[in-house]
Image (cartoon, rainbow, N blue to C red; front, top):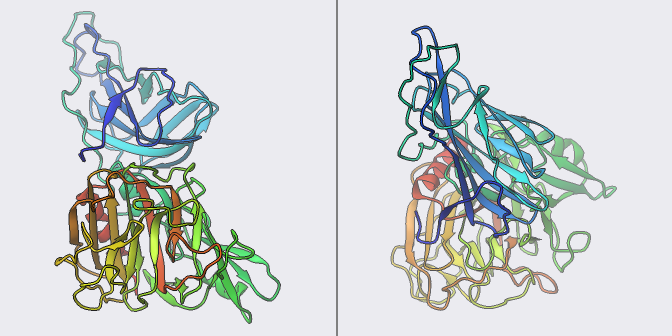
Amino acid sequence: MPENESTRTRPIGSRRRRALLVAATTTIALTGGGVAGARLASAAAAGCQVSYTVSSEWQGGFGANVAITNLGDPITSWRLTWTFGAGQSIQQLWNGSYTQSGSQVTVTNASYNGNLGTGASASFGFNGSWTGSNPAPTSFALNGVACNGGTTPTTPGPTTPGPTTPAPTTPPPTTPPPASSLPCDIYAAGGTPCVAAHSTTRALYAAYNGSLYQVRRSSDNTTRNITPLSPGGAANAATQDTFCANTTCVITIIYDQSGRGNNLGYQGSGGIGGAVQPAVATRESLTVGGAKAYSLFIPGNSSYWRDGHTTGIPTGSQPEGMYMVTSGTHVNSGCCFDYGNSETTRRADGAGAMDAINFSTSCWFGGCSGSGPWVQADLEYGLFPGGSSSWNPNQRAFTSKFVTAILKNNGTTRMALKGSNAQSGSLYTIYDGALPRGYNPMKKQGAIILGSGGDCCINNSNQSVGTFYEGAMVAGYPSDATENAIQANIVAAGYR
């Protein structure tokens, strides 16, 4: 666990007023002096322990992880129920299915995590909303039996006292993401949920079936939202082809799949305001898993932005991670093809005000080896190839058609840069070490930038070119294992 992450025990029913990434954990494991006695051979015992963790929180919303440990006899399916105490509502859930009626919540297993032997665990996560306060639930029931850290016969047993089944003494293991998980499912399973997820090519959650992006045609200025072909699938490019036939279309919005509303609008007239134009929607087509899709192809003078500081994007010295899939064949040295955390002012506000991936041939501080393109960190007042303005000898160019670029920054002491071919191979660690001098702590503002530097584009144009296929930002400092799983998923997606 990184130095600056922590988890604290939250008193049942307490009011929560801490900001994003102050985690809260409630474990329902009351191990009283005894339970019903020794059971008959024909009787099945049921019992469970539940760990409920608020992994991140922002104004009006939160992310939570729930781990179930089966203390009774093996079961082939499970149903967990609880009651929210302050009107909270689940908005999105992974590694299971849910229903909610008022404050009553029921979560059932997914197809791959229903079998739980004695002592086995499963976990799921969700994003929720709250108003006023966000207390943890006070009790849970698994398949109708209260989770109190012991076991209870499901048929009447004898009255002879028997020993209490002890609760586990180690935290329950996390259920690994199934092969069908997509990037934001993988991040959530690793405890670093997506706070923004953008793509013009595919869904980034296995269950996502909402809008990916919006196009506007020039013939009548009407718009159309493009969705996946199916939940978790590639974009429905045929919808765009039909809508844009015999006219020109531009991409006006890239929707946030995380449920937090961090949609990216273009920085120009008719968008969020500014001096640039939306990107043409049909500049580049490709296939993902054999399905046709379109990229966000920026030939210069386009940029997309969102002020997300109140909707989950990390601020100040809060930790975060991010990735994007871009192209090593459509680049230049113009400032600055970025994706990540940026200024809410759209001005250059000083060292540490940004925390974004840069992919370009820009050699900001000089002394570079080769011609790039490189994965670097735009931390404002400089594109850093590593932990200083000096050239990082571990840097390497990524010239493949599709490139994975990764940056993570714990906000106080450490950052890491990684890259790879998005069609094959493992991640290459470019840098993993201390933050540059003058950037500790970070001063992130919590806006999102895509396609330009942070001081673009209120009244100035964007000089950079680049291609964006997909990307996400997460709260917390992702593990190397999580990022390796992200890369494996990108390769399996089949960009061609």
